[in-house]
Amino acid sequence: MQYEDEAVTAVRATGELPAVGGHERSLGQIILRQTQMTEQQLEDGLRVQREEGGRIGEILVRRNYVTEEEMLFALASQLDLPMVKEIKPEECDAELALRVPINFAKQHRLMPIRRVGRGVEVAVADPLDVHALDDVRRVLGAEILPLVAPSAKIVEAINKIYARQEGGVDLGDNQGDDMEGQADELTDILDLTDEAPIIRWVNSLMFNAVKERASDIHIEPREKELIVRYRVDGNLMEVKRANRNYINSILSRVKIMAGLNIAEKRLPQDGRIRRKMAGKDVDMRVATAPTAAGESVTIRLLDRSSVLHDLADIGFGEDHLVVIDELIHRPHGIVLVTGPTGSGKTTTLYAALSKINDVERKIITVEDPVEYQLRGVNQIQVNTKSGLTFGAGLRAILRHDPDVVLVGEIRDRETAEIAVQASLTGHLVFSTLHTNDAPGAATRLIDMGIEPYLVASSLEVVVAQRLVRVICKECKEEIPESETALIREEFGALVPPKLYRGAGCRTCQGTGYRGRQGIFEMMAVSNEVRSMILERAPSHHLRQVAIREGMISLREDGWRIIRDGRTTVDEVMRNTKDEETGIRFNTQAPASAPVPVAGGLK
Image (cartoon, rainbow, N blue to C red):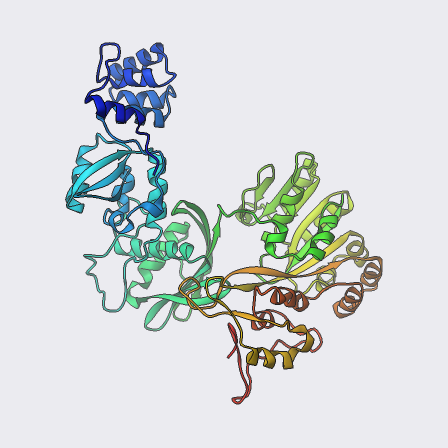
C-alpha cells in the first residue's frame, strides 16, 4: 500500500492542523488550500449545503470542483488519518477480510486490511461512518484503525479478495430447509435484499463457473436429484448436486433472471442474463428444453471483458500468418472459418477483424450475440423476434457503404446469397460455417443452393479449426522414454525426441491441462480449386488438390504444437480425424497394450 503521509506527518508533529483563514478545522478551507479549487467554487458549495443540506466534501465532488481523491486527502488531514492511494490484495489478510460480508463491505465502502498490534487497519471511503466502523469492530473483536481510501480502489480490492472465496449454499439431500450458518455467496451479483437460499445457490453456481473459466453450465434433472456440470476447456465435469425437491425453485430462479416464462415447461425457451461477477461483465445465453426427468437448462457464458487476442496468440503458425495476413487485406471476397460449435471460430474472426481495423475502413457486423465490443466497429445484434435476422441485417448494412462486413454465421440460403453478392460488389466478407474441414465449405455453400460459379468467384480462403487443451505449466513433465518409444512405434517419424504431459495439480484440477489453443487447416482458393468448384467436385477431391498445393491438415498442425511441447499426442488425436482412413484415433487398446490417456500413455 502507498501512504500519502507527508501532510499527515506534519500534522502529527505539531499535534494540530495549521490555521487556514481563521477556520482551523474547516474541510472546505483545507480543500481550498490543497487543491486548485477557487474561493467562488467553495462559496457555491456552501450555498448548496445551506439550501439542500449534505456534506460539503460530497457537494464539491458532485459539482466537479475537486476529485474524490482530493476530497479524501483533505478529510484525512482534517481527521488526522493516513491516506491510502492503492490497496494491493496480496498484502491484505484475506481471512480477516472475509469475516465481513461482501454486501456490508460494498454498501459502506470498507474492507479490513491487516492486523496491527491489537487493532485492525480498515480501508474506508467514509471515515465519518462511525456506525459501520462500530459494526466491524464488533465482528472482528478488535479496535479499528481507519485508513482513508478512494471508494473505487476499495471496491476493486473487494472484488479480488472475495473472488477467491468458494462456498455457496448447499442444497444437498441432508440440507433440508435449515440455512442458518451458511456463508453468503461473496459475489457482486447479489442484491442486498437477496437472502433466499435458492438465490444464493444459483448465484454461487454462476459465480464459480466464471471463476473456474467454464464456457457452459449444464443444469440437468435426474430421477432423484439435480446435477450441475461445467464445461471447462471443452470437457464436462460435475460440480454440484441438489435435492430433487429444489428443482422447480432453481429452474424458476434461472428463468426469472433470463426473462423467460416460468409457467411454460413443455416448450424450449431461449433467454439471456447479463450480470457483473467479481468485476467482470458476463453475458449468459440461457436455453431450456423439456426432458423426461424435467426441464434441462444450458447456460453459455461469454465474458464481455475478455481481451481480444492476436492471430499469433490464438495459435496460428508462422506460415499460416503470412498467408492469412495477405488474404484479409484484399479488397473483396469471402473469408470463412469453419468448425463445430465452441471451436473458437468467432474469436478467430475477431482477431482477423482487429488486425485490419483502422480509420480508413468502415466495418459493420451482424452477430448473435455481440460477444466482444470492438472500438470503431458498428455492431448489430440479431433479434429474430423483431424480424432482424442475419439475412435482414446483412441486406440493410450493405446500404451503409461498408468496406468490411462480418456475418456471425451463414445459416441459410438467404444469408449465403447476400454474403456472396456483397463480396462480388466490392466488400470483404467474414463469416462462419458449420463444416468438418476446409474443403467442405465450398460444397456446403453449393448444397445450400448457391450456384457453383458464384462460390468459385467469391471464396478467397477457408480456415477450419479445432481447440486442443494446453498442458498445464505448473505440473508439466517429460514423458519417460519407454512410453515415448511406444508412441513412436505408432506414429513413426512424426514423434519428436521429447514428449510432455501434465501430471495433474491443484491449478489444473488434476486434469493435466489448463487453457486451450487452436489448430488450423487453411485452404486458399487457387485457380485450380476454383475450376474444381465450378465442376461441383466433391470435397475429398478438393482436399487432395489443396494438400498438393501446400495445405496443412488439422492433424499435421496438431503435430506442430506437440513438437513445441504445448499439448499431448492423445489430445490432438482425440480432436482430429485420420484423413487417410476417415476414422478417429481409437483410444481403446488391448488389455496388454498401453492405453492413451489424457496426459499421454499410461
